[in-house]
Length: 227
Ligand code: SAH
Figure: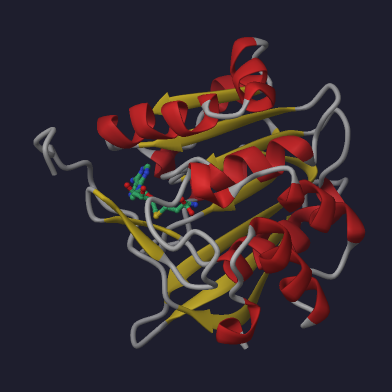
């Protein structure tokens, strides 16, 4: 499916993702249309495949970003609060920011210092995202995403962009009631996406969905600047 979605432009890529059913809702199509992947992916930005961004990280494939936004859509909208764990390039942080404006906030938490700086630079390439950084709609925090960021919560939606070895309870605790988390979890032989829903009464339901391949959520490493 993914090779059929690649294109020479951001518009073309998104149109292809929509045509092939990987983007389902107009609202996700519009949000992805407002974020140029070329600001976040150093090479082949409009290929529907992951690309290396340095520091053992990748920007996920466009169809993976589309999946994540679609999965969280019920909990997004103006005024909502989102946490993006392992925000890496900052691409999905920007897309999700468009899905909570006006009035919402998104915190991207990333443990590699250089990626915090890189994602901030990437976001500043577009004046709209630059303003979102200035007015606090988007916040990039350096820290261990497995612990979340309670100061910014509770969250309507939590996206986890790297595979956890175990389901992080701290993140479930930081979900609002109602709230939803999208998280890849290592299941031994392969990783699976789990959708964790907290209902109005605070009851938590965990649903195992489909197999995926993400980089792992790890302890912080120190990288040299030239990595
Ligand atoms: N959504 C991002 C995914 C980047 S790859 C994008 O598409 O650009 C996953 C990211 O998770 C990497 O940047 C990696 O540095 C980060 N990461 C891994 N373990 C982490 C942890 N414990 N806390 C915070 N970030 C982590």
